[in-house]
Figure 1: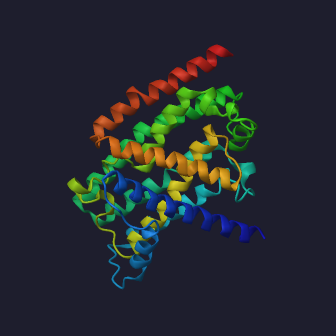
Figure 2: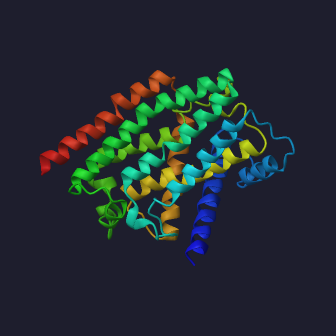
Figure 3: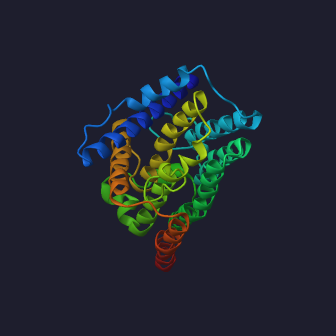
Length: 296
């Protein structure tokens, strides 16, 4: 029974992520006065990639990197409080989840190191540098919320204490943390203005440049889960989680706002992005920590 519910949860997260990918393309197309591809175009893309007969591997480390990439993402999926699967929630510590979210980037770095493509090396170096921006910001937000909840870092407790009316959401109780975490979420999702690691006009999609066929299909799979997880973190921390329908609607709403931001701002350079995180979201989160400590 547990395995069945786990499978349903994985499928729900996967198809939600695919829907978000298609929705992002559709919104972008409409803003540019185009019709755009169908909502389920990402599913067709994945099916096409896995059906290709030619799947070039540059070595064992490239194969292993894809396993780390997807495996780390799937593992973090079960530490996210959600209405689909609640069996692991007793162990859902936000610090553990933040640690697990580092695995995909490290896995990609291993794979790019194996293929030795200069565009890939530039892209992954940018991605790892970007971690210094949004990861520090998100960690400061978590520290601040932990202080506000008496040192508690258990995800379930943070969600449960936002129950009842929406006025109890941390979005309204700690708006500085919420704004900082929103920008950190954009950084994790690699949405503009924080898209410099892929930069197709400059480095031909960066880390993914040598990945094709089933390897690229695995990266698409991983990104669909990452969308659900990373937006789900924000929904749980600041929007009070919710039941299946409400949680899904909140995830979609946050993603739509992120896509609108993505279409408004131009892409930052790497140093501009890190400076932005340290100058604004990180300062906001530190100011929030000071306010929390002053209020105790």
